[in-house]
Length: 396
Ligand code: FEO
Image 1 (cartoon, rainbow, N blue to C red):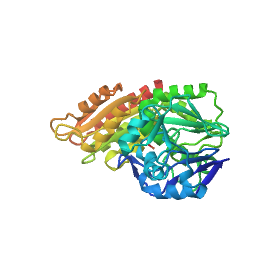
Image 2 (cartoon, rainbow, N blue to C red):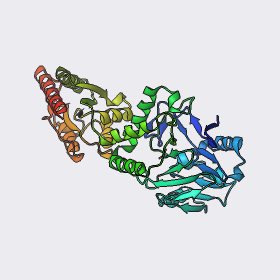
Image 3 (spheres, rainbow, N blue to C red):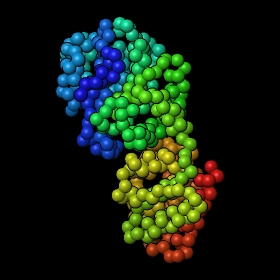
């Protein structure tokens, strides 16, 4: 349902209740998502971002509820990823000569997706476009999270439209943060940050400082996914500053896969050691765990402890994706440790420790290997590993 979020500014986006996998199949979205598109009716009519392509007809219906689409004067494409630009071809069919406002890198990537001769207008940080009573002000935000990413600010109504930043994959019946369950909202907001923005944390901190230094009053933050921050909108900015600092909780995650439960028994013994030292931990069997939820738990925790039996001189394949996430997301301020069973060659622990080294995560306890099923002594070593890691967590 079209919603007037403030005077003359309409949410014309779409709620995607059924979405469970995003970015192809890369990101789980247990609570669906929304694609937020904003229509500003001033002397000029402006559309800020669109929706994912399969929902373009719904976008056009929503626009028509407010204005004739041929009357749109300006389209802003803050970001070319297709969940926001997918509706552009449908919109531009009605207004082929309207300017498409993009960042310095936006023309190349929007054109690269749609191969259309649209009239691009590139803008830089601080550049303004007057649309009548109010202005649009642009802030380029490269690598938050693509090179072309940009924020658009509307004066007068004081709305920041930062595209993906401050968003959540969260389908709800409501449009505003004060109307939804805050625990659900923050679960989705931190999952979004952990899985998408973690490697760009230093840029997040710099960009927030840059935007705050512009001294633009912000009454509403209207991201391109999830609910709009209307009540105390800067709360999510403060959270981003906290998350970007990557100061972890004094807790641990234990990730493992197991063939005949030997490595699982080791994982549980390590947990006992952590628990004995009063350090909270979560334990994930990666063959049956959601990778993106585990990434969120890794993001929060200080220690990452990974276990695998040795298979074909390597680790179990189910662990490979999360090890690659740990590399790619560039987590900071973590410590690591490894464990696992083996029958003959026994390389898994060494391989996991090498991955920690590649990720610049210090290994704080000697890895524990157990031949065949772990005996009491091996389980005691695991508990000791847990205690050593607990010491590193508590002294951090
Ligand atoms: Fe980077 Fe929501 O797309």
